[in-house]
Length: 148
Image 1: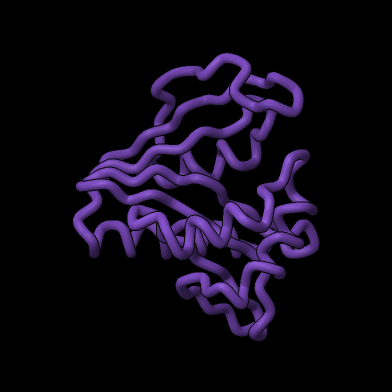
Image 2 (image 1 turned 30 degrees about the vertical axis):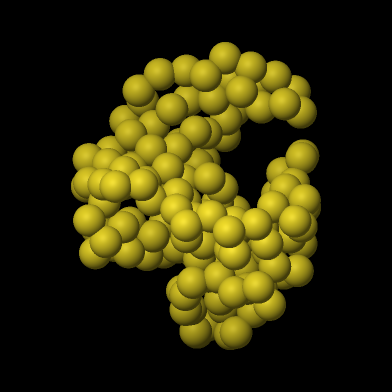
């Protein structure tokens, strides 16, 4: 059985996170954005999921007052379907609750049914549509919310 851990992301994790980002999204974030988020954004908190000490997923969020906005979340394609994304998302929720977060929101592609199913299992509900949200193909995003 693989050993799974979750922890805050460090600068030394950026290369591994970027590799997952590139394998997961049509327009991955540039490297400098991760450095900026970790070092200069006082609202940003990023986490990684490790399996046998290998980074297999990551999640970022902005926590402002009592609200959290998920900025991005991904699991390496070769590790999907094993519950690591759910574990990571639960870890982020627990961290948020422990730090006074009462409302969590995120955007998800209309076509990403697997992610929508996972989020709904955590109680997130649709709150609206952001038209042409994704710049790679102008796909709409569903805004999901949950009171924690």
